[in-house]
Image (cartoon, rainbow, N blue to C red; front, side, top):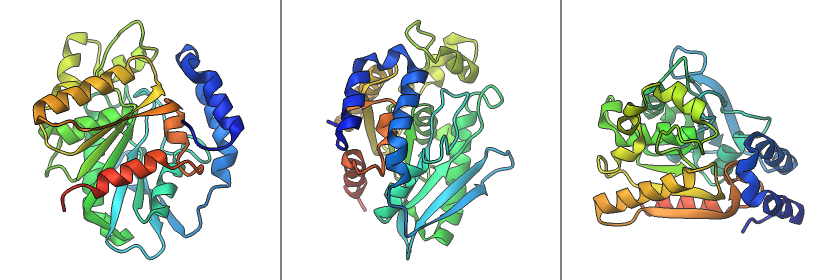
Length: 298
């Protein structure tokens, strides 16, 4: 159940299962509803370094959120979504800075990663950008108070696809995987051209016109290739099939590892609010992620 003002809870309940009937319209309503909360949210004590280049392309940049006095702090790097063809690390005045401000307030060094989009950068361009950004952070984040040996990646939607492909596919890890763990939130873990998929054009732009290649290019087939700790999160009201794919990926991880991964369905939340609520006063998911990270072997 969503925490926070009654008006916000009422809006999320009203949209509820109708989320998928109007993804752009409902997404904008959610952004607008959270905007005043995020604008007034605590941000003091966090220094932000903007648009640090990890590559040569204009979109190969990242922002670093450093809490005051940070030294050898754990690192959380976030990768936004956008159906592979759109999206930015700052999709509005507050999103997705809110995610990194919240983690910085908990003592983490936060990183907000931007990456190249399709069709300019088709598969595996997004995963390669995550790899390049993570390698840059491994080399540079200590200068911002972070501990490169304690880095966690969070990917939302298409960003979750890129994080999963990077973290689970050894072929996309030049120099090895620098992440200790991953959190895949509402991630597209299977490419498809299903009539139920409203973002099928974006999937085609990224994964290509040859649908027969989708299985080999999707994170779903990678579940048994890595032991990296993974936390799978879905919203109660998802973009069509993303909840199904999250459940299937968790099942495949459990089958490969003979133990279940951490899995959470955020009740009352939808595909946008599952990230928009960070730093709004609601902390359930953030606390679950911190508990997941703190439970990892040293």
